[in-house]
Image (cartoon, rainbow over all chains, first blue to last red; front, side, top):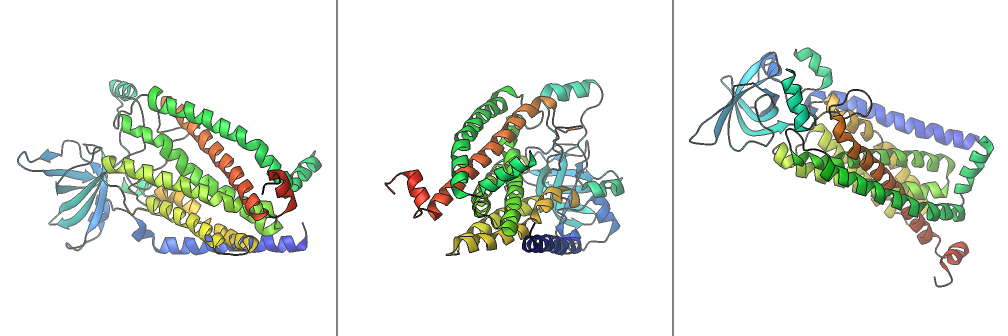
Length: 158
Length: 250
């Protein structure tokens, strides 16, 4: 390699590394703002002003979903294994919504109850045919939806 | 042996030889793409059983996932070409790097569109500003930026060099896209599909995914060689060797 090319390669390396370093610094400073949702434990750990809108993510507690037969009102609880928070919502729910499923509710907390104005379902990246799902159930080990948190945080939440 | 490979690579730097290699490889790549696409789509749409919770809707992933991976793999290929173009100043590599951008942009667009279509019924929304979706949208803008910057220069070689620097600056976005679902909480699902070791996708559903991954790789390469050859014709259209290749009519 000629000296000119070596110099150019060094400059290319410096450009890539410095852009990477700048991005790393900027992203770690914005870490909390880049979180799409918070867990019920996060809500318990810190006081959130009642008027502040935020997204709450977790699993729908089994047996907690109750629907008002007269309206579109539905209430359920969202858990991260450690804490759970009751959620109320008026509207249509996404296809994937069910008990045990990961959901993200957008709204605000009022007296310990989370009033959602939007509820999104989360997919846990599990794909299998019906037969496999039934076989797992028959074997007594039905598929458990994984907690919708980042891998890094998962250990802290349990 | 090493000498033969080295000489072979050096020869690719010569526009007439590069032109010939693209011309010879292209039909084979297109044929390979057509075959793997037909097999992949047949398996994806007819053979693989419906998903236990999404039934038939999950089949869109056989387009979405390979496109997303190709959008990112294409960027890596383009970055390697950009480094070679910047350090060695080989014109055919500059042309290849510039030809890769629109193809990568197309894959990114396919990924975003199919994701949106799937997201509306499953998540309950077309779009959310979470880290994964946003970083993928930024990838589209980076691709468009590279294309725009290159097009803005009268001198194509100068334009290519400037755009190559932008390619290297945008490279930082690739690991961000990849790790976004691990570093931050997102609406988008995490990484779970794997071909080695534990996978969250049942083995019976994987074959069409492999076929579609092969198909997108071949499509990218075939389109890259064709675009590069066209760019070469455009740039050298007044030169003798191109006129000879295309016949006296040009």
